[in-house]
Amino acid sequence: MRKYSLLLAVLLIALAFGNIGTAAAQSGAVENYTFPAQAEWLDEAYFARVGDAVNARTIPTDVSNVKRFTFAPGSTVQVVATVDTGNHNWFLVRGWDTDGYVGSGWVQETAAHLTEIEALDTPALPACSLTEAGSPTDVDIRFNDGWTHDAMSTACPIFYEGRQEETEFHHYWIVRDAGAPTSTHYLENGFMWLLEGGAWIHPADWSVGHGFAAGNTGQTLEHAPMVSFFAQDKQVVMAREGYRWPFVIHTIDGSELDFAYGAFGTDANDVDRCELTAPREMSITGIYVSADGSFRSTSVGALDCTTIIYWQLPDGTHQLYGLVGTDENLSYKFVYGAYLIPSDWDGTDIGEFVMDEIVASARVGTEIDVEGIDGLSDFTR
Image 1: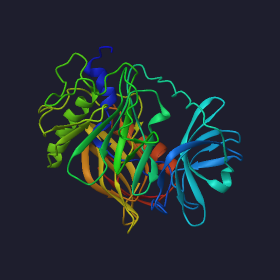
Image 2: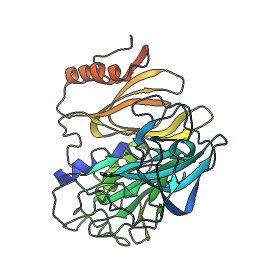
Image 3: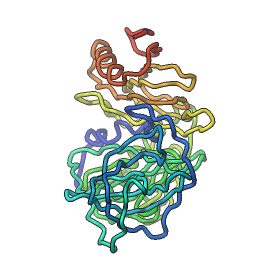
């Protein structure tokens, strides 16, 4: 595994501190997050051929949905879960075309006209193209009361963070590490499920979890595990927000390692988390509340960075919200855009980006409330 500097490490952790949950409506008004029925993972996933072009969806409903992409006729899919909504049967699939992996999502059985085929050798994982930095990847497919992500969508080392139930612990699951095969301990047919959470991928030779042991965070190693950097800064976020949860590290061999708050040091990593050349889109966290169609327990932002969000609040207000640092326990209904701002931008740069890019591209809301953005006040368009 190669040696890397802490400055490079920050390129991985730039968004970690406000991104412990799941993307919502990043670029549109998804109006239905209530899962229509109880989905079930198949005991044995199977392969099928797509008969007709079919859209892969974020959630298995016919209305108020998001199209992720379209499977072309003749595509090969692996069916991993199913749900009967009463009107249609839907399958959760991952799929490939002649060029390789396409993606994953829910497809409607009658629209896809799937034909089961003989078992295939599972296609090779898509090559890991990362070389100099890691990247967040959205956990944004709805599955029952939470979310799921296809860990087979990349060959890169990958870990997940967040929660699978509402307990006061912060979790990291190491699913693939440098030089190690994919762990099956935490996956269902290759998919990871979270109540709220995010996923991070890294260059193929970067250590994600190597070095963790009982009572040992691995931080003194030459190649310290990336998860230790995330946990170190998460402690600072917790302190600023007034809580101090312990950590649970789920290692690649299926073991659980418990660390008390404070085990990862007392200070944040001394790096610029928003050393960017352009705004970087962020995922927004939250647990869905079906009673009023909103999300709660939302965590946003990044340590010492400026974040701009355009969202709809639970009361229907369209708001532009700016903050420096992190904020937690927020609620929202839809997110139309959320961005980490480069550290060298001034107020003029931010104002132009807000109006010309965020608000203009969303094309929703007429009376817009503004909070926390210097030089910009409430307006009507």
